[in-house]
Image 1: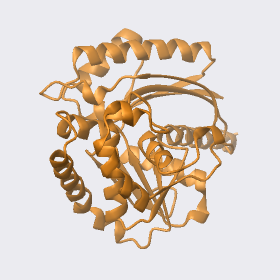
Image 2 (image 1 turned 180 degrees about the vertical axis):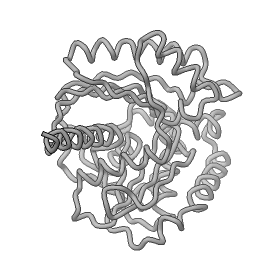
Image 3 (image 1 turned 135 degrees about the horizontal axis):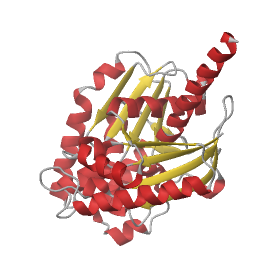
Length: 317
């Protein structure tokens, strides 16, 4: 069947059209996305601004047309941190529903971590043993650890690259602001790290998201043109050595780095500080980059649900 997955993230709105059926990897058929930067379209009270609401509504309307044109039988819409944490989230989604007819589900942070974990587990398989998955989004950092398809522990922390840039680096990336942000990030991650580490050794630490992919590329990983099956890693010592230079660069210089888009360049330093903290606090020499993430997790769970329903119907006959 052909599914449309509508991902309203803190940075980007993304419709991914896939051909999918149980027992096979979802095959991307078409991608439609626009930069929304909802994590930065918040007023002082934490509400999405009128400009942000209109941008979101326009994108959802356009995505609905694209999904129909591409033959989607079903469209799964979900929103993550920027909408989840907004003080006017119900009003925002109500406006979108009224204007477009599309219902968007707000994913709790732990569900976001859980579904991302499912996607990474399916990509790497059981040979990965006890899996650890880290995902830096625009509004939050998701962490999940476990030995099965569902994690033993899952956390969502308000440490997204867009959020931290807005709250801590809006007036410039000075040594002082970066030092203060570094301490805040590490304290927040370390506070509950023990709950995830008690289960035992992390056999296969992995990362997903555009931020981690960009950082890995800066640190020498192969480009996207070499395909998704090429192994890509983010080495902790290489990233730590590059952070001082990243702090001295302006947005244009950051955007010129390999794998960094113009729209996300201003968030790169905050993302690098989070990635550096994750690997240090969890004592990880490197993170392997997984090409699958939350969208694929949503698809895989939906396919599992369809398979269960069909199995029950077959048994009833």
